[in-house]
Image 1 (cartoon, rainbow, N blue to C red):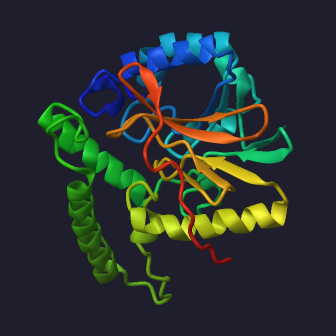
Image 2 (cartoon, rainbow, N blue to C red; image 1 turned 90 degrees about the vertical axis):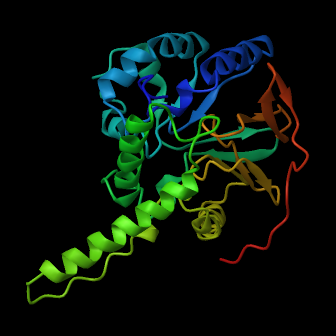
Length: 279
């Protein structure tokens, strides 16, 4: 959720209206809502403007008792967890990753950036720089790049890589210190959503954490790629792309992936997949 301006993908294609109807569905089902990070787009917009613009949703989340895990795009709020500095009741349920036993399975809920070495500490890196560049182009265009008929994110990614290549070379030319610093790899600091090629590496980190921590199922969102894999990894996707997706976890611990389309949940054809995972 952004500030409603040309950089706000959530403001395009009637997504806010669709999301409101999805919340109606959750309430009708008597469900509990978990928001797994990147609720707010602070990489491209002013924090205060975003929160004020989306106050109606915050009020509704509070009434629903929604649990909110902070992601990397809204990591500016992470240090405020548990401080009471944000007086709105919605933020009282803002949290870091947590576990919940559902049925006979032990679930861990997180955004997923917590295990991403280049996105877990909240320090702005190239991923955020690329998002800012994207926003500047969207300002000129007058609408989000992912709205109907807009430029694709892959096109922007190619432009961003060219910019970063020139930046890195300029820094290397200007660097005169005797101590040679390790070369910064731009690609590694992008999020998996910005560079899908990083997804396999992130999955390996997730699998290692699961085995070391002993939980059964990881539920995350960081890649923005909705999928069920091998019965242990579930990704809820996002609501700012071409599809609006979510996960539904039944009391017995079974997980289903849905796409919200035409005011109702629709099960996608490719519900799950099996892939080898090496740790």
